[in-house]
Each structure stands twice: as C-alpha cells, then as structure tokens.
Length: 467
Ligand code: 6PG
Image (tube, rainbow, N blue to C red; front, top):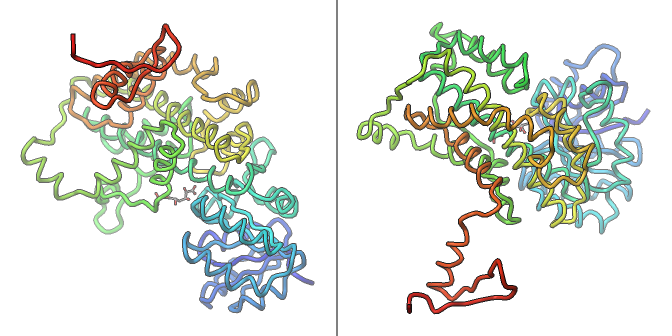
C-alpha cells in the first residue's frame, strides 16, 4: 500500500494539487515541516480519498511506490536546491523529481544536468491557475526528460484542466522548456494585466463608475474578449470593502507587486534577442507604480488630470477594440519569443501544443487561444502569429479603433503605454524598410562600424562629412 505521488511543501499550491490528484483516485502523501499544514491537508481531503501528511521527509520517501514520483512546490531559488540536497540521499536511481514552482529556467537546466549524472530524472514543470486552478484543474507545462514525462503523464493528465475533453498538459520541450514556457506565460500575463488596467484608466477618464465598469467587462467577457482576466476584472468591480463598505478596488494601493517572472521574460528576450515591448512596458509600469512619492510630487508640478474628449458611449468601442488588438500583440510577442528561444536554446518547444495547453486552466486563457491554436495547426513553424491570415484579419478589423484609442489616450493625457507600445511595434513590424538605415549611417559616421548596401553586396565604410 505504497503511495502513488509525493509532494514537498504544502502551501496553497502544493496542498491543492495533491488534493486534486487524490480526487482523481491517486493515493498521495505530502511533507511539510509545519504540522498545521499536514493537518490542513488531511482535513481538507474529500471523503474516500487516500491523503496523508507527514513531518519527516524520509518517512514520505519511504512510503512512496518506486520509481518514486515527487513534486516540490517551494519558493524559487535556494529553497529548491536545499530540497534537492536533502532528497538526494533518500532517492534511488530512476526516481522522478519535479519542480512545480516558478523557477528560472537556467536553474532548472543546471539541476537537470546535476541530477542526470546521478540517474535521477528531474523535470521543471510550469503550473498555472492559482489556488482554485490547482484544486480543480490547472494548466500544466512540463519540460525535460521524455521518459520521466511518460511516468507522470497519467497523473498530470488526470488533474489538468480540460478543454472539450482534452487535458491542458503536453510535453513542451527539452531540459528547461517547461519553466521557460511558464516564464513567457507570465510575461504575457503581465502584459494583458497592464493593458486591462489602462482600459480601466481610460474608461474612468470618461466618467465610468465601478458599477458601469463591472457591466462593461462582464459584457466583453461574453464576446471576442472572453478571457479569465477580463472575467475576474468584472468581478473585482463588484467587491465591497468589509471595513468601510466602499468599493474595495478604490481603497487598494496602486503600488503593484511582482515576484520576478515578468522581469525575467524581458531580460531573456534581450538575450535572444526578440522584441517584446508590450511585456517590457508592463514590467516598467509595475516598477513605476512603486515610485509613489515621486509621482505625487510630479503630479503637483504637471497636474494629473485627464480630460476626456469623448463620452463613455463613444469611447467604449475604441477601448474594446484597442484591448483586443493589443492583447493579440502581447501574445504575438510572447509566442515569437518562444519560437526563437526554442531554436537558439535547442528546447524543441512545440508551439501548437503550447497554445493548446494555454486554452484552459491558466491565467492567460482566453478565446483568442482558439484562434492561435487553429493558426498553428495550419502552420506549426509560424515565426509570428501576426503572419497568419485569420489573425491578420482580426487585427486589421480592430486597427482603426486602435489608432483612435491611442490618439484619445494621448489627447486626454491618460497613460496607456502598453497600448501605445503595441501599436508602435505593429507599425514597425509591418514596415518593409525601417528607418534604421539612418542608425547604420550614424554608427559608421562616428565609429566606423560599417554598413551594408541594398544595391551592392559587401561591407562598406565611408569617410563621412568630407564633401
Ligand atoms: C499563474 C501565475 C502565478 C503567480 C505569479 C504572479 O500562472 O498561476 O502566474 O504563477 O500568480 O507568480 O506573479 P507576480 O507576483 O510576479 O505578479
């Protein structure tokens, strides 16, 4: 009567994933040093399921069926290495160890190699969907060892979210690919959240109340903007503060937190390099949100009012279409990054599977992912989804309102950096000849960096300014 699966770290994510597994008929055991967490695990198990919590790692490892399958859900960084160090003397060759947290993929790569030498299979797996998703069906992004994946596949498929019966989990590539895909997922998550917050500001500038905002997002969620983030945004505007009775959103500080995955996406995009300016902008705006006192001082100097030149009814279709346009651009940039990283880092990330896995359970799930899934089915090697005909038709249908929205934002003085950067990227991307020929001339002028010509092959340098 050995257990099927073990979990190290029984915080909300670890506990709920384990309970989800138990609900699907697997016998599960969890380890946490905190006795209260072990008790919470056992007491929240559904009737008839086999769930045990223990306070000794060695005890859990002993009670697992071999080859053992162990997942850890502990904070990224040193805690993961600490868990590996304490696990190693307890494991046998062929056991599978999974890191289900938001680890940086380079750490995962290092751990895969370290444990491979010891014949332990190590997998980095991205898990998205928050607390509720973990219990009822997350989106799961596994990468690494194919053989190890086959060992845990039945369990992951059982617990994953389902879209039309298809589990939102698939093997997403070699070595650190699972965590790489999850990192980019989070970059896109940052971008879409930034875009939605800009819509909130733009609509408020035209006088929208929280009750109206609730209704607007509720309706959008029933159309082509249908998505988890739009849905929860609608619900947020309804929430009352228990203390004051005010709308809760109005009493929340505007300093936004972050745990680093958005920043990693931007940093890594520059290493490749791939341009992901909507994600970069989202990271920058969270950073700027922390500069509260300086912003307040600047508001005294420059004024912080935004003046709407449109009525709410006139503005609504522009914001709707602008959000759809920019959201497509955010996905396009993230997916283009995965395309390039897959090649450059030899991860063999299957993009058709990635968008399919993202259709359910994760924070960035949306009806747009159906469009992208079809696009990749048509051409799996698409370097950028903007080159797909169906996506292009959708983008073009929103372009006019998108331009009107950005014009409105500029004229009303409302910060809409995400939307503006989406449009600027779009205009640069659809340009066969960028003005960067001038940059090449300048580089050659002051630094003799040389340039290529459009009419004659070769490398050229000019003694500039001597005519
Ligand atoms: C998910 C989320 C999840 C978590 C992020 C939030 O997919 O379920 O992305 O991983 O909420 O860590 O990140 P920030 O704290 O950086 O916003």
